[in-house]
View (cartoon, rainbow, N blue to C red):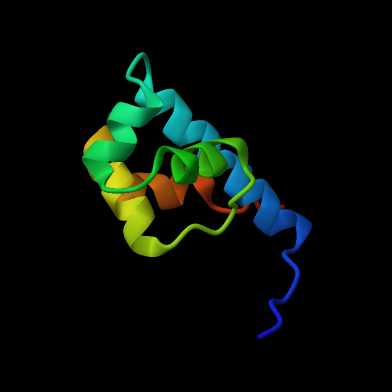
Length: 83
């Protein structure tokens, strides 16, 4: 299966998601948050750095739950800005 390349806007949205999750994590370790969410620390690292700009829904939901973020808040803060 060939994956369609991401648009620059999709990559930017992924970067915003990563920055938001990183900020919400605060002083907690990446390993601690990842373990609580049931994902690997490497997965969280890739999301936070923008190397995984389109993570699976349930991965994002699990991380949001551990970090005390609502999915609505994530969508609103990561949505593409249109002018």
